[in-house]
Amino acid sequence: MKKFKWDEEKNKLLKKERGVSFEEILNSTFLGAEKHQTRNNQIVLLFEHEKYVWVVPCVAGDKFIFLKTMFPSRKYTKMLKAKKVQNEESKIIKRRKRN
Image (tube, rainbow, N blue to C red):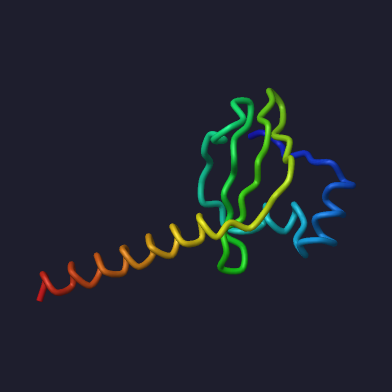
C-alpha cells in the first residue's frame, strides 16, 4: 500500500484556514477516487468528514501519493446525500415487497 505525503507548511495553512488537517481527513470515511477533471496527472480522493464531502487533489507516484490540497465540496455532498436517500428508499421498497 502506498504511503501519503504532503507539504507540512500547506498542512498548517489548511488547519488554520479550513480547520482541518490532512491527518484528520485521512482518518475520515474514504468514499472513493476519481480522475481530476482538468489535470491529467492528478486524481481526487473523496472523504466524508463531519457529514460533508472533502475533495483532496493528489498526485500518485510509484512509492507514495502526494496530497496537494483539500476543500469541502457542496457538489459532492449533495450527491452523497441523494445517494443515501436513494438507498433508504430502496430498503423501504424491499421491506414492503417482503410483507
